[in-house]
Image 1 (tube, rainbow, N blue to C red):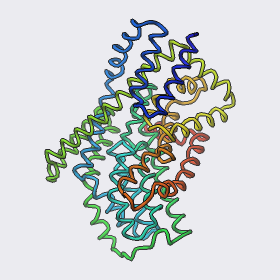
Image 2: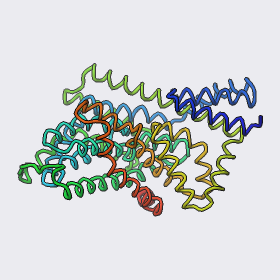
Image 3: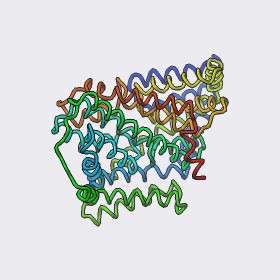
Length: 435
Protein backbone atom coordinates (compact mmCIF):
# COMPACT_ATOMS: atom_id res chain seq x y z
CA UNK A 1 0.00 0.00 0.00
CA UNK A 2 1.40 3.42 -0.95
CA UNK A 3 1.96 6.19 1.59
CA UNK A 4 -0.88 8.28 0.12
CA UNK A 5 -3.24 5.29 0.35
CA UNK A 6 -2.30 4.83 4.01
CA UNK A 7 -3.02 8.51 4.65
CA UNK A 8 -6.39 8.42 2.88
CA UNK A 9 -7.34 5.18 4.63
CA UNK A 10 -6.45 6.75 7.96
CA UNK A 11 -8.75 9.69 7.20
CA UNK A 12 -11.55 7.30 6.27
CA UNK A 13 -11.16 5.38 9.55
CA UNK A 14 -11.03 8.70 11.38
CA UNK A 15 -14.39 9.85 10.02
CA UNK A 16 -16.01 6.45 10.68
CA UNK A 17 -14.91 6.49 14.33
CA UNK A 18 -16.09 10.07 14.77
CA UNK A 19 -19.45 9.14 13.22
CA UNK A 20 -19.68 6.32 15.80
CA UNK A 21 -19.41 9.06 18.50
CA UNK A 22 -15.92 8.24 19.78
CA UNK A 23 -14.16 11.20 21.42
CA UNK A 24 -12.65 13.20 18.57
CA UNK A 25 -9.44 14.01 20.46
CA UNK A 26 -8.56 10.38 21.23
CA UNK A 27 -9.55 9.30 17.71
CA UNK A 28 -7.22 11.93 16.21
CA UNK A 29 -4.35 10.79 18.42
CA UNK A 30 -4.97 7.07 17.90
CA UNK A 31 -5.37 7.14 14.11
CA UNK A 32 -2.39 9.49 13.68
CA UNK A 33 -0.15 7.36 15.92
CA UNK A 34 -0.88 4.09 14.12
CA UNK A 35 -0.66 5.83 10.74
CA UNK A 36 2.81 7.11 11.59
CA UNK A 37 3.78 3.64 12.78
CA UNK A 38 2.72 2.12 9.44
CA UNK A 39 4.58 4.82 7.52
CA UNK A 40 7.86 5.05 9.42
CA UNK A 41 7.84 2.52 12.26
CA UNK A 42 7.47 2.55 16.04
CA UNK A 43 10.40 4.88 16.60
CA UNK A 44 8.94 7.81 14.71
CA UNK A 45 5.42 7.14 16.02
CA UNK A 46 6.53 7.18 19.67
CA UNK A 47 8.88 10.09 19.02
CA UNK A 48 6.04 12.14 17.51
CA UNK A 49 3.75 11.25 20.42
CA UNK A 50 6.40 12.49 22.83
CA UNK A 51 7.46 15.61 20.94
CA UNK A 52 4.41 17.08 19.19
CA UNK A 53 2.17 17.48 22.27
CA UNK A 54 4.96 19.44 23.97
CA UNK A 55 5.69 21.56 20.89
CA UNK A 56 2.03 22.51 20.57
CA UNK A 57 1.18 23.13 24.24
CA UNK A 58 4.41 25.04 24.89
CA UNK A 59 3.09 27.88 22.70
CA UNK A 60 2.78 30.93 24.98
CA UNK A 61 -0.36 32.23 23.24
CA UNK A 62 -2.29 29.12 24.30
CA UNK A 63 -2.00 30.17 27.95
CA UNK A 64 -4.71 32.74 27.25
CA UNK A 65 -7.33 30.04 26.62
CA UNK A 66 -7.75 28.80 30.23
CA UNK A 67 -7.69 32.41 31.43
CA UNK A 68 -10.47 33.51 29.08
CA UNK A 69 -12.46 30.39 29.94
CA UNK A 70 -11.98 31.12 33.64
CA UNK A 71 -13.10 34.71 33.08
CA UNK A 72 -16.31 33.48 31.46
CA UNK A 73 -17.05 30.91 34.16
CA UNK A 74 -16.33 33.36 36.99
CA UNK A 75 -18.65 35.92 35.37
CA UNK A 76 -21.34 33.26 35.03
CA UNK A 77 -21.12 31.73 38.52
CA UNK A 78 -20.89 35.08 40.33
CA UNK A 79 -23.72 36.69 38.28
CA UNK A 80 -21.56 39.51 36.93
CA UNK A 81 -23.60 39.39 33.72
CA UNK A 82 -27.06 39.31 35.35
CA UNK A 83 -27.69 43.03 34.77
CA UNK A 84 -27.06 42.88 31.01
CA UNK A 85 -30.43 41.49 30.01
CA UNK A 86 -32.47 43.59 32.44
CA UNK A 87 -30.78 46.81 31.26
CA UNK A 88 -31.18 45.88 27.59
CA UNK A 89 -34.83 44.99 28.23
CA UNK A 90 -35.57 48.47 29.59
CA UNK A 91 -34.01 50.19 26.58
CA UNK A 92 -35.69 47.94 23.97
CA UNK A 93 -39.14 47.73 25.57
CA UNK A 94 -40.75 50.03 22.99
CA UNK A 95 -39.54 47.95 20.02
CA UNK A 96 -41.47 45.06 18.47
CA UNK A 97 -39.98 41.92 19.99
CA UNK A 98 -38.16 44.03 22.57
CA UNK A 99 -37.35 41.15 24.94
CA UNK A 100 -35.90 39.06 22.10
CA UNK A 101 -33.82 42.04 20.95
CA UNK A 102 -32.69 42.55 24.55
CA UNK A 103 -31.49 38.94 24.68
CA UNK A 104 -29.38 39.56 21.56
CA UNK A 105 -27.73 42.63 23.11
CA UNK A 106 -27.27 40.77 26.39
CA UNK A 107 -25.61 37.87 24.58
CA UNK A 108 -23.27 40.26 22.77
CA UNK A 109 -22.26 41.74 26.12
CA UNK A 110 -21.69 38.33 27.66
CA UNK A 111 -19.70 37.32 24.56
CA UNK A 112 -17.17 40.00 25.43
CA UNK A 113 -16.12 38.06 28.52
CA UNK A 114 -16.89 34.42 27.76
CA UNK A 115 -15.42 33.58 24.33
CA UNK A 116 -17.77 30.59 24.18
CA UNK A 117 -20.94 30.13 22.18
CA UNK A 118 -22.25 27.45 24.53
CA UNK A 119 -21.61 29.50 27.67
CA UNK A 120 -23.37 32.46 26.05
CA UNK A 121 -26.46 30.41 25.21
CA UNK A 122 -26.58 28.73 28.61
CA UNK A 123 -26.25 31.97 30.57
CA UNK A 124 -28.73 34.01 28.53
CA UNK A 125 -31.11 31.08 28.15
CA UNK A 126 -31.60 30.83 31.91
CA UNK A 127 -32.32 34.55 32.15
CA UNK A 128 -34.12 35.51 28.93
CA UNK A 129 -36.21 32.52 27.80
CA UNK A 130 -38.37 32.26 30.97
CA UNK A 131 -38.95 36.03 30.82
CA UNK A 132 -40.11 35.87 27.20
CA UNK A 133 -42.36 32.86 27.82
CA UNK A 134 -43.90 34.71 30.80
CA UNK A 135 -44.74 37.65 28.51
CA UNK A 136 -46.40 35.27 26.01
CA UNK A 137 -43.71 35.37 23.33
CA UNK A 138 -44.02 32.55 20.83
CA UNK A 139 -41.78 29.72 22.13
CA UNK A 140 -40.06 29.33 18.74
CA UNK A 141 -39.09 33.01 18.65
CA UNK A 142 -37.98 33.04 22.30
CA UNK A 143 -35.79 29.93 22.19
CA UNK A 144 -34.55 30.42 18.61
CA UNK A 145 -33.37 33.96 19.30
CA UNK A 146 -31.35 32.99 22.37
CA UNK A 147 -29.86 29.93 20.63
CA UNK A 148 -28.55 32.00 17.71
CA UNK A 149 -27.52 34.96 19.87
CA UNK A 150 -25.09 32.63 21.63
CA UNK A 151 -23.14 32.23 18.39
CA UNK A 152 -21.96 35.83 18.73
CA UNK A 153 -19.76 34.54 21.56
CA UNK A 154 -17.27 32.98 19.14
CA UNK A 155 -16.91 36.15 17.07
CA UNK A 156 -16.60 38.96 19.61
CA UNK A 157 -13.31 38.78 21.56
CA UNK A 158 -12.17 36.92 23.49
CA UNK A 159 -12.85 34.03 21.10
CA UNK A 160 -11.32 30.64 21.84
CA UNK A 161 -11.77 29.56 18.21
CA UNK A 162 -9.95 32.65 16.91
CA UNK A 163 -7.09 32.16 19.39
CA UNK A 164 -6.59 28.54 18.32
CA UNK A 165 -6.83 29.48 14.65
CA UNK A 166 -4.28 32.27 15.13
CA UNK A 167 -1.82 29.86 16.74
CA UNK A 168 -2.18 27.21 14.04
CA UNK A 169 -2.34 29.54 11.01
CA UNK A 170 0.25 31.94 12.50
CA UNK A 171 -2.01 34.97 12.16
CA UNK A 172 -2.04 37.89 14.61
CA UNK A 173 -4.62 37.17 17.31
CA UNK A 174 -5.20 40.91 17.78
CA UNK A 175 -6.06 41.29 14.08
CA UNK A 176 -8.36 38.26 14.27
CA UNK A 177 -10.09 39.80 17.28
CA UNK A 178 -10.69 43.02 15.37
CA UNK A 179 -11.98 41.19 12.30
CA UNK A 180 -14.20 39.04 14.50
CA UNK A 181 -15.55 42.14 16.24
CA UNK A 182 -16.61 43.64 12.89
CA UNK A 183 -18.47 40.49 11.85
CA UNK A 184 -19.85 40.02 15.36
CA UNK A 185 -21.41 43.49 15.27
CA UNK A 186 -22.84 42.79 11.79
CA UNK A 187 -24.30 39.54 13.11
CA UNK A 188 -25.84 41.24 16.13
CA UNK A 189 -27.44 43.99 14.01
CA UNK A 190 -28.69 41.40 11.51
CA UNK A 191 -30.31 39.29 14.24
CA UNK A 192 -32.03 42.40 15.63
CA UNK A 193 -33.41 43.16 12.16
CA UNK A 194 -34.66 39.58 11.76
CA UNK A 195 -36.56 39.79 15.06
CA UNK A 196 -37.88 43.27 14.29
CA UNK A 197 -39.17 42.32 10.83
CA UNK A 198 -40.67 39.01 11.93
CA UNK A 199 -42.61 40.63 14.78
CA UNK A 200 -43.60 43.58 12.62
CA UNK A 201 -45.07 41.21 10.05
CA UNK A 202 -46.63 38.93 12.67
CA UNK A 203 -47.30 40.85 15.94
CA UNK A 204 -48.74 37.74 17.62
CA UNK A 205 -45.20 36.36 17.92
CA UNK A 206 -44.33 38.94 20.60
CA UNK A 207 -47.09 40.98 22.28
CA UNK A 208 -46.10 44.56 23.03
CA UNK A 209 -45.45 45.26 26.71
CA UNK A 210 -47.24 48.10 28.41
CA UNK A 211 -44.18 49.68 29.99
CA UNK A 212 -43.44 53.39 29.97
CA UNK A 213 -40.27 54.81 31.46
CA UNK A 214 -38.62 58.15 31.47
CA UNK A 215 -35.13 58.58 30.05
CA UNK A 216 -33.77 59.05 33.58
CA UNK A 217 -35.30 55.73 34.68
CA UNK A 218 -33.74 53.97 31.73
CA UNK A 219 -30.34 55.43 32.56
CA UNK A 220 -30.78 54.33 36.19
CA UNK A 221 -31.19 50.71 35.11
CA UNK A 222 -27.74 50.79 33.55
CA UNK A 223 -26.24 50.69 37.04
CA UNK A 224 -26.46 46.88 37.12
CA UNK A 225 -24.18 46.58 34.09
CA UNK A 226 -21.12 48.21 35.68
CA UNK A 227 -19.35 44.95 36.68
CA UNK A 228 -19.25 43.55 33.17
CA UNK A 229 -18.59 46.94 31.58
CA UNK A 230 -15.61 47.42 33.89
CA UNK A 231 -14.20 44.02 32.92
CA UNK A 232 -14.70 44.81 29.22
CA UNK A 233 -13.07 48.22 29.63
CA UNK A 234 -10.13 46.66 31.42
CA UNK A 235 -9.59 44.02 28.74
CA UNK A 236 -10.12 46.08 25.59
CA UNK A 237 -8.65 49.29 26.97
CA UNK A 238 -5.42 47.57 27.91
CA UNK A 239 -5.36 45.34 24.85
CA UNK A 240 -5.81 48.02 22.20
CA UNK A 241 -3.99 50.64 24.26
CA UNK A 242 -0.85 48.53 24.05
CA UNK A 243 -0.61 47.97 27.82
CA UNK A 244 -0.71 44.18 27.53
CA UNK A 245 -0.89 41.49 24.83
CA UNK A 246 -3.89 39.30 23.91
CA UNK A 247 -2.15 36.49 25.78
CA UNK A 248 -2.00 38.54 28.98
CA UNK A 249 -5.50 39.97 28.51
CA UNK A 250 -7.16 36.75 29.68
CA UNK A 251 -5.30 36.75 32.99
CA UNK A 252 -6.01 40.47 33.52
CA UNK A 253 -9.72 39.97 32.76
CA UNK A 254 -10.03 36.91 35.02
CA UNK A 255 -8.26 38.72 37.89
CA UNK A 256 -10.47 41.77 37.45
CA UNK A 257 -13.63 39.62 37.43
CA UNK A 258 -12.55 37.86 40.64
CA UNK A 259 -11.79 41.19 42.32
CA UNK A 260 -15.18 42.67 41.36
CA UNK A 261 -17.00 39.54 42.51
CA UNK A 262 -15.17 39.72 45.85
CA UNK A 263 -16.03 43.39 46.33
CA UNK A 264 -19.69 42.70 45.53
CA UNK A 265 -19.78 39.82 47.97
CA UNK A 266 -20.71 37.33 45.24
CA UNK A 267 -17.54 35.27 45.40
CA UNK A 268 -17.67 32.14 47.52
CA UNK A 269 -15.27 29.22 47.72
CA UNK A 270 -17.88 26.96 46.12
CA UNK A 271 -18.41 29.30 43.14
CA UNK A 272 -14.68 29.76 42.68
CA UNK A 273 -14.19 25.97 42.77
CA UNK A 274 -17.00 25.42 40.26
CA UNK A 275 -15.48 27.96 37.86
CA UNK A 276 -11.99 26.46 38.25
CA UNK A 277 -13.29 22.91 37.73
CA UNK A 278 -15.22 23.81 34.58
CA UNK A 279 -12.21 25.73 33.26
CA UNK A 280 -9.86 22.76 33.76
CA UNK A 281 -12.36 20.36 32.17
CA UNK A 282 -12.90 22.57 29.12
CA UNK A 283 -9.17 23.33 28.74
CA UNK A 284 -8.21 19.66 29.00
CA UNK A 285 -10.71 18.69 26.32
CA UNK A 286 -9.51 21.46 23.99
CA UNK A 287 -5.85 20.57 24.40
CA UNK A 288 -6.44 16.87 23.73
CA UNK A 289 -8.25 17.70 20.47
CA UNK A 290 -5.60 20.25 19.46
CA UNK A 291 -2.74 17.82 20.13
CA UNK A 292 -4.55 15.18 18.08
CA UNK A 293 -4.92 17.66 15.22
CA UNK A 294 -1.18 18.42 15.36
CA UNK A 295 -0.39 14.71 15.14
CA UNK A 296 -2.81 14.39 12.22
CA UNK A 297 -0.95 17.20 10.44
CA UNK A 298 2.33 15.25 10.79
CA UNK A 299 0.64 12.07 9.56
CA UNK A 300 -0.88 13.79 6.50
CA UNK A 301 2.39 15.51 5.61
CA UNK A 302 4.48 12.33 5.82
CA UNK A 303 1.94 10.27 3.90
CA UNK A 304 1.45 12.90 1.21
CA UNK A 305 -2.32 12.64 1.66
CA UNK A 306 -2.54 16.28 2.72
CA UNK A 307 -0.91 17.51 -0.50
CA UNK A 308 -2.97 15.05 -2.55
CA UNK A 309 -6.27 16.30 -1.10
CA UNK A 310 -5.24 19.96 -1.30
CA UNK A 311 -4.30 19.59 -4.98
CA UNK A 312 -7.56 17.74 -5.66
CA UNK A 313 -9.61 20.51 -4.04
CA UNK A 314 -7.71 23.21 -5.94
CA UNK A 315 -8.12 21.32 -9.25
CA UNK A 316 -11.83 20.80 -8.59
CA UNK A 317 -12.35 24.40 -7.60
CA UNK A 318 -10.09 26.17 -10.08
CA UNK A 319 -12.75 28.87 -10.22
CA UNK A 320 -12.42 30.92 -6.98
CA UNK A 321 -16.21 31.14 -6.61
CA UNK A 322 -16.57 27.37 -6.93
CA UNK A 323 -13.66 26.81 -4.53
CA UNK A 324 -15.23 29.07 -1.90
CA UNK A 325 -18.60 27.37 -2.39
CA UNK A 326 -16.91 24.00 -1.76
CA UNK A 327 -15.23 25.27 1.42
CA UNK A 328 -18.52 26.70 2.71
CA UNK A 329 -20.36 23.46 1.93
CA UNK A 330 -17.72 21.33 3.68
CA UNK A 331 -17.98 23.33 6.91
CA UNK A 332 -21.77 23.52 6.85
CA UNK A 333 -21.96 19.74 6.52
CA UNK A 334 -19.31 19.13 9.20
CA UNK A 335 -21.10 21.59 11.47
CA UNK A 336 -24.20 19.41 11.37
CA UNK A 337 -22.33 16.58 13.12
CA UNK A 338 -19.22 17.91 14.89
CA UNK A 339 -18.57 20.59 17.48
CA UNK A 340 -16.79 23.70 16.08
CA UNK A 341 -13.29 23.32 17.48
CA UNK A 342 -13.16 19.67 16.47
CA UNK A 343 -14.30 20.56 12.94
CA UNK A 344 -11.70 23.31 12.66
CA UNK A 345 -8.74 21.34 13.97
CA UNK A 346 -9.68 18.29 11.93
CA UNK A 347 -9.76 20.20 8.63
CA UNK A 348 -7.14 22.94 8.94
CA UNK A 349 -4.22 20.65 7.95
CA UNK A 350 -5.96 20.17 4.58
CA UNK A 351 -7.71 23.52 4.11
CA UNK A 352 -4.91 25.95 5.05
CA UNK A 353 -2.63 24.96 2.13
CA UNK A 354 -5.63 25.38 -0.19
CA UNK A 355 -6.32 28.88 1.12
CA UNK A 356 -2.63 29.78 0.89
CA UNK A 357 -2.32 28.51 -2.71
CA UNK A 358 -5.47 30.42 -3.69
CA UNK A 359 -3.81 33.62 -2.45
CA UNK A 360 -6.59 34.40 0.00
CA UNK A 361 -6.03 36.29 3.24
CA UNK A 362 -5.61 33.96 6.21
CA UNK A 363 -6.97 36.72 8.46
CA UNK A 364 -10.17 36.98 6.41
CA UNK A 365 -10.53 33.21 6.19
CA UNK A 366 -10.16 32.77 9.96
CA UNK A 367 -13.17 35.02 10.60
CA UNK A 368 -15.23 33.43 7.78
CA UNK A 369 -14.34 30.00 9.16
CA UNK A 370 -15.46 31.01 12.65
CA UNK A 371 -18.77 32.26 11.27
CA UNK A 372 -19.30 28.99 9.38
CA UNK A 373 -18.46 26.93 12.45
CA UNK A 374 -20.98 28.89 14.51
CA UNK A 375 -23.72 28.29 11.96
CA UNK A 376 -23.06 24.61 12.65
CA UNK A 377 -23.94 25.25 16.30
CA UNK A 378 -27.57 25.91 15.33
CA UNK A 379 -28.10 23.48 12.41
CA UNK A 380 -29.72 20.04 12.80
CA UNK A 381 -29.18 17.32 13.75
CA UNK A 382 -26.46 18.23 16.28
CA UNK A 383 -26.92 21.94 16.83
CA UNK A 384 -25.27 22.16 20.24
CA UNK A 385 -26.68 25.60 21.11
CA UNK A 386 -30.16 24.27 20.41
CA UNK A 387 -29.68 21.40 22.85
CA UNK A 388 -28.29 23.79 25.47
CA UNK A 389 -31.50 25.83 25.22
CA UNK A 390 -33.54 22.62 25.30
CA UNK A 391 -31.81 21.76 28.57
CA UNK A 392 -32.81 25.15 29.97
CA UNK A 393 -36.49 25.06 28.94
CA UNK A 394 -37.07 21.34 29.55
CA UNK A 395 -40.44 20.07 28.32
CA UNK A 396 -41.82 23.55 27.64
CA UNK A 397 -40.49 23.60 24.06
CA UNK A 398 -39.54 20.71 21.77
CA UNK A 399 -36.19 20.44 19.98
CA UNK A 400 -38.01 20.66 16.65
CA UNK A 401 -39.64 23.94 17.66
CA UNK A 402 -36.25 25.43 18.61
CA UNK A 403 -34.76 24.37 15.26
CA UNK A 404 -37.72 26.02 13.51
CA UNK A 405 -37.06 29.15 15.55
CA UNK A 406 -33.44 29.38 14.40
CA UNK A 407 -34.22 28.77 10.71
CA UNK A 408 -34.91 32.46 9.98
CA UNK A 409 -31.59 33.45 11.49
CA UNK A 410 -29.68 30.78 9.53
CA UNK A 411 -30.93 32.38 6.31
CA UNK A 412 -29.44 35.71 7.45
CA UNK A 413 -26.18 34.01 8.52
CA UNK A 414 -25.76 32.44 5.08
CA UNK A 415 -26.38 35.79 3.40
CA UNK A 416 -23.74 37.38 5.65
CA UNK A 417 -21.22 34.64 4.78
CA UNK A 418 -21.83 35.31 1.08
CA UNK A 419 -21.36 39.06 1.63
CA UNK A 420 -18.09 38.81 3.54
CA UNK A 421 -16.85 36.26 0.98
CA UNK A 422 -17.54 38.66 -1.89
CA UNK A 423 -16.28 41.71 0.03
CA UNK A 424 -13.31 40.64 2.25
CA UNK A 425 -12.82 44.30 3.21
CA UNK A 426 -15.83 43.97 5.52
CA UNK A 427 -13.60 41.76 7.69
CA UNK A 428 -10.24 43.44 7.13
CA UNK A 429 -11.11 47.13 7.35
CA UNK A 430 -11.00 47.31 11.17
CA UNK A 431 -7.59 45.58 11.58
CA UNK A 432 -6.21 47.79 8.77
CA UNK A 433 -7.71 50.94 10.34
CA UNK A 434 -6.14 50.35 13.77
CA UNK A 435 -2.66 49.33 12.58
